[in-house]
Image 1 (cartoon, one colour):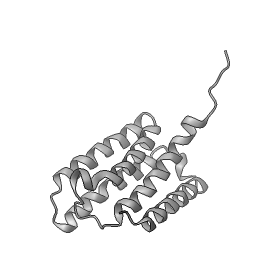
Image 2: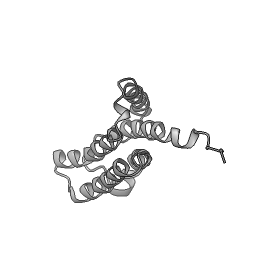
Image 3: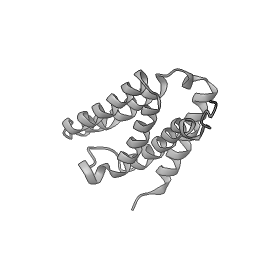
Image 4: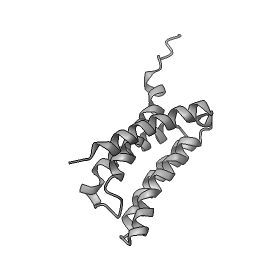
Length: 135
Protein backbone atom coordinates (compact mmCIF):
# COMPACT_ATOMS: atom_id res chain seq x y z
CA UNK A 1 0.00 0.00 0.00
CA UNK A 2 1.26 3.47 -0.90
CA UNK A 3 2.30 5.83 1.88
CA UNK A 4 0.15 8.92 1.36
CA UNK A 5 2.48 11.39 3.10
CA UNK A 6 4.90 11.68 0.13
CA UNK A 7 1.91 11.99 -2.21
CA UNK A 8 0.39 14.88 -0.27
CA UNK A 9 3.78 16.59 0.03
CA UNK A 10 4.22 16.20 -3.74
CA UNK A 11 0.75 17.58 -4.45
CA UNK A 12 1.41 20.60 -2.23
CA UNK A 13 4.85 21.18 -3.67
CA UNK A 14 3.49 20.90 -7.21
CA UNK A 15 0.97 23.63 -6.43
CA UNK A 16 3.64 25.79 -4.82
CA UNK A 17 5.93 25.40 -7.84
CA UNK A 18 3.12 26.32 -10.23
CA UNK A 19 2.17 29.41 -8.22
CA UNK A 20 5.80 30.46 -7.77
CA UNK A 21 6.48 30.05 -11.51
CA UNK A 22 3.43 32.20 -12.27
CA UNK A 23 4.35 34.85 -9.67
CA UNK A 24 7.95 35.09 -10.90
CA UNK A 25 6.75 34.94 -14.54
CA UNK A 26 9.00 31.97 -15.27
CA UNK A 27 6.07 30.32 -17.02
CA UNK A 28 5.88 33.11 -19.59
CA UNK A 29 8.89 31.57 -21.31
CA UNK A 30 7.69 28.68 -23.46
CA UNK A 31 10.78 26.67 -22.53
CA UNK A 32 10.06 26.62 -18.77
CA UNK A 33 7.73 23.61 -18.50
CA UNK A 34 9.49 21.62 -21.24
CA UNK A 35 12.73 22.08 -19.29
CA UNK A 36 10.96 20.95 -16.11
CA UNK A 37 9.81 17.80 -17.94
CA UNK A 38 13.34 16.98 -19.10
CA UNK A 39 14.65 17.36 -15.55
CA UNK A 40 11.79 15.27 -14.12
CA UNK A 41 12.47 12.51 -16.66
CA UNK A 42 16.18 12.42 -15.81
CA UNK A 43 15.74 11.55 -12.12
CA UNK A 44 15.16 7.84 -12.74
CA UNK A 45 18.40 7.73 -14.75
CA UNK A 46 20.16 9.30 -11.77
CA UNK A 47 18.65 6.76 -9.37
CA UNK A 48 19.73 3.90 -11.62
CA UNK A 49 23.29 5.20 -11.81
CA UNK A 50 23.44 5.74 -8.04
CA UNK A 51 22.16 2.24 -7.28
CA UNK A 52 24.05 0.39 -10.00
CA UNK A 53 20.77 -0.66 -11.66
CA UNK A 54 20.67 -1.05 -15.45
CA UNK A 55 20.18 2.33 -17.12
CA UNK A 56 19.22 1.40 -20.68
CA UNK A 57 15.47 1.26 -20.01
CA UNK A 58 15.69 4.42 -17.90
CA UNK A 59 17.49 6.23 -20.73
CA UNK A 60 14.87 5.14 -23.26
CA UNK A 61 12.00 6.32 -21.04
CA UNK A 62 13.78 9.61 -20.29
CA UNK A 63 14.37 10.03 -24.03
CA UNK A 64 10.68 9.57 -24.81
CA UNK A 65 9.64 12.17 -22.24
CA UNK A 66 12.43 14.51 -23.39
CA UNK A 67 11.23 14.21 -26.99
CA UNK A 68 7.74 15.18 -25.84
CA UNK A 69 9.24 18.14 -23.97
CA UNK A 70 11.14 19.27 -27.07
CA UNK A 71 7.99 18.98 -29.17
CA UNK A 72 6.19 21.07 -26.56
CA UNK A 73 8.86 23.76 -26.63
CA UNK A 74 9.04 23.77 -30.40
CA UNK A 75 5.41 23.42 -31.43
CA UNK A 76 2.78 23.51 -28.69
CA UNK A 77 3.46 23.97 -24.96
CA UNK A 78 0.44 21.80 -23.98
CA UNK A 79 2.44 18.82 -25.27
CA UNK A 80 4.80 19.42 -22.35
CA UNK A 81 1.78 19.53 -20.04
CA UNK A 82 0.64 16.16 -21.38
CA UNK A 83 4.20 14.88 -20.92
CA UNK A 84 4.34 16.01 -17.29
CA UNK A 85 0.91 14.53 -16.57
CA UNK A 86 1.83 11.25 -18.28
CA UNK A 87 5.07 11.15 -16.30
CA UNK A 88 2.98 11.41 -13.14
CA UNK A 89 0.92 8.42 -14.26
CA UNK A 90 4.18 6.66 -15.12
CA UNK A 91 5.46 7.36 -11.59
CA UNK A 92 2.48 5.53 -10.11
CA UNK A 93 2.80 2.53 -12.45
CA UNK A 94 6.51 2.17 -13.16
CA UNK A 95 7.34 -0.31 -10.39
CA UNK A 96 4.85 -2.75 -11.90
CA UNK A 97 6.14 -2.05 -15.41
CA UNK A 98 9.93 -1.90 -15.09
CA UNK A 99 10.81 -2.20 -11.39
CA UNK A 100 12.08 0.42 -9.00
CA UNK A 101 15.41 1.06 -10.78
CA UNK A 102 16.99 2.24 -7.54
CA UNK A 103 14.47 4.97 -6.76
CA UNK A 104 13.65 5.52 -3.08
CA UNK A 105 10.39 3.86 -2.04
CA UNK A 106 8.72 7.22 -1.41
CA UNK A 107 9.79 8.78 -4.72
CA UNK A 108 7.04 7.59 -7.09
CA UNK A 109 4.25 9.02 -4.90
CA UNK A 110 6.14 12.25 -4.24
CA UNK A 111 7.15 12.85 -7.87
CA UNK A 112 3.80 11.62 -9.16
CA UNK A 113 2.00 14.18 -6.99
CA UNK A 114 4.14 17.02 -8.30
CA UNK A 115 3.77 15.84 -11.90
CA UNK A 116 -0.01 15.50 -11.81
CA UNK A 117 -0.46 18.99 -10.36
CA UNK A 118 2.01 20.63 -12.77
CA UNK A 119 0.61 18.77 -15.77
CA UNK A 120 -2.97 19.73 -14.97
CA UNK A 121 -1.90 23.31 -14.21
CA UNK A 122 -0.27 23.60 -17.61
CA UNK A 123 -3.15 21.93 -19.45
CA UNK A 124 -6.02 23.73 -17.71
CA UNK A 125 -5.90 26.97 -19.77
CA UNK A 126 -6.05 24.96 -23.01
CA UNK A 127 -9.17 23.10 -21.98
CA UNK A 128 -10.97 25.58 -19.74
CA UNK A 129 -10.88 28.60 -22.00
CA UNK A 130 -14.03 29.54 -23.84
CA UNK A 131 -13.91 28.86 -27.57
CA UNK A 132 -13.92 31.85 -29.88
CA UNK A 133 -17.41 31.87 -31.40
CA UNK A 134 -17.05 35.02 -33.53
CA UNK A 135 -18.02 34.46 -37.14
